[in-house]
Image 1 (cartoon, rainbow, N blue to C red):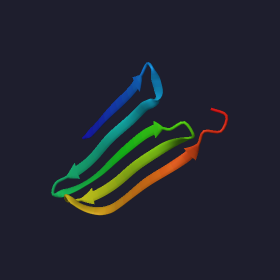
Image 2 (cartoon, rainbow, N blue to C red):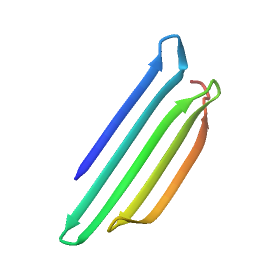
Image 3 (tube, rainbow, N blue to C red):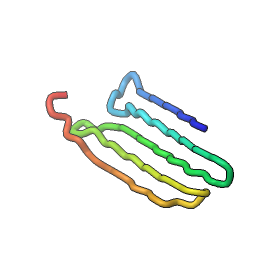
Image 4 (cartoon, rainbow, N blue to C red):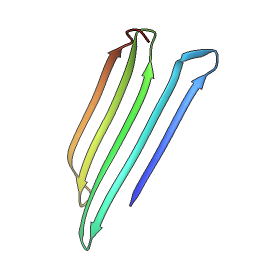
Length: 79
């Protein structure tokens, strides 16, 4: 099955506190075989940069087979 949740938040007096987050899970099964992929993405900002934090995890039969994390900053040039 599939599932997704999207959350956004912003403070009217302080746009630098804005955040957006997405979580998603996809799972496939057939008999005893099963695989799943989970991902999370969180975007926030400072006065000088956007911050992107992400996680990707794949599992087979409930055991993790791959995981990667990112924590990147992208300069706010002209924005």
